[in-house]
Each structure stands twice: as C-alpha cells, then as structure tokens.
Length: 361
Image (cartoon, rainbow, N blue to C red; front, side, top):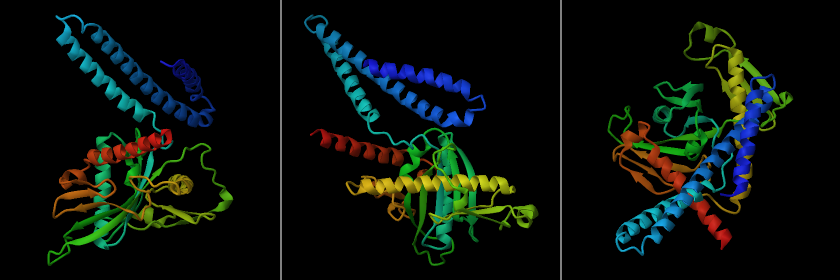
C-alpha cells in the first residue's frame, strides 16, 4: 500500500470532518461545493485502496499456495488454491485499471434531461413522451428523484419539449451517453393504412452546475420577461404573470419555465437550467478542442448525431455507436436500460485504456 494514498485519505477525512461542522454554520454555502468535491475524492480513493488490499491478499494467498506445492499430500489442493488466487488477482487488476482511468469531473452531478420532438410531427411528440417515461422508470429503479422543470405538451399527447431534473447518485455518469438523436420506427396510432413511420427526438443530458461560484452569470447580461402561463393549470396559472423567460444575451440561450404557480420558483428553476446550459456550452467548447485529436468511440455527444433506433415491429433496439442490438424493446422502453448503459460505459473505458496503452508504448 502506497503511504501517499493512505496519507491523502487521512487528510481528506480530517478536512471533511472540519467542513461537516461548518455546513451547519452561516458559511454553509461557501463550503458546500468543496465538501461535495472532497467527498467524491474520498469515496473514489477509499474504493481504490480497498481493491489494492484485495489484490495484496490474493497475492499473499498465491504465495502461500505455491509453498504447499512441494507437499505431495497437499499438491492438488495447493494447485486449486493457487488458480483461485490468480483469478482473484486478475479480476482486481481489471477493476484497478478501471478505477485509475481519468475521471469525468461531472460524473457525480445531477442532470437536467431535455427531450425535444424532431421530425415526425405528432408521432415524434408521442415518442418524446415515451422517452420521458423510459427515463423516469429507469430513475425509479436507480432510486433517483425526478422533478418536472418545464413542459410543452402537444395536442395529441406527448411533448414538443420537456425538461426534468434528475437527482441522485452518479446520475450524469449513467446518463451522459444518452445525448443525441433517438429514432423510432413504428405504425402510428393515427396511421389508417398500417404503414411504418420513422420519427425522431433529440435528447440532451446537461450536468447541473454547482450552486456556488462555478458559473458566474452577470445580471446585466440577462433579459428577464414574465408572462401568463399557457395550457393546463387552472385560473391562477393562466391569469397571473407567473411564467418566466430568461435570455442570456452573450450566448443567445433562452430558457422558459411556467410550470409552477410561483413566479419566484419559476425564475429559480430557469436560472438553474441556464447555468447548466452555460456549463454544457463551456464543456463542449473544451471537448471540441480535444476532438481535433480524437473522437470518442461512443460518439461525440453531438445532438445531431443519430445514436439509437427503436424498431417496434421487429421488437429491437439498436445503439449505433457500439453496434449493440437487443430484441427486448418492451423491457427497454419500460426502463430496463442497464445493458445498454453498461455497454456504452465499457466501450468508453476500453477506449481510454487503449489510449493509455498507446501513450505507454
């Protein structure tokens, strides 16, 4: 065990203990971001040290078994024990390689999930509703919380646009590869002749910005408009100017929120979405520079990129980035996304390992 790892772990524990006391004080907002950052580092380091210990114990067991090989009465047992120890060591090496890969600093963040209907008219809007239900069900299985931020329902059901906030453990890590164009092939309910139509929706997964200091938004660069909300919600919603539209003038980003009866709460939600979009813009600019050198195996994250097709007549879902086809569309649209998300994650990690091997060659 490297003393530096244990020393760093001890430093983190002391600092987290200090911050935990400060979080109940008037300085809570100032220290919250640092607490979250150090807590993530502590969890990652603890996991790394645990697996290093597992490898050390397996290696010790292997050495002990090899010493018994010279005893004829114990040779068979010793060979079995040695093989088991080597298998454990190999497994720990795979895990340690994964844990030591470069970390995405956004992996532990909550996200804003935006779904927009694209080509296909009413059928596309219905598909947007299906995607929202799929992600909501997946979130329930992960024990995450889903909060509706903004919605623009279509006339026949579904959504022209819908934004939700998803909060929980490692939300961005799980959902970050969902950004892109999702295509559906099926017979719409409004199709009298039974013809298969192809429609599409765009999904964007935006990591939530920290509330303190990460994204500075100059109030002078904002235009804030208030107006009466439209759609369902009762007389109060429709007769008071509770809806909020915020325009960030330098970037041209526009955010609307009208789903709460309170103008103040709508404004607060809209500001959080704006901060997430600005963080996403900054991240994408950095990724664009990196993309000059390489392109990710699981896609660039470009929202114009077709990433997945849901073919209902054939009962299949195909993720085009990793050529994965699964014939269980009902389970997938019902929220069973683990196999797809694990496949994307494993492909991304394999690419990172290949890059490290190339650097070491």
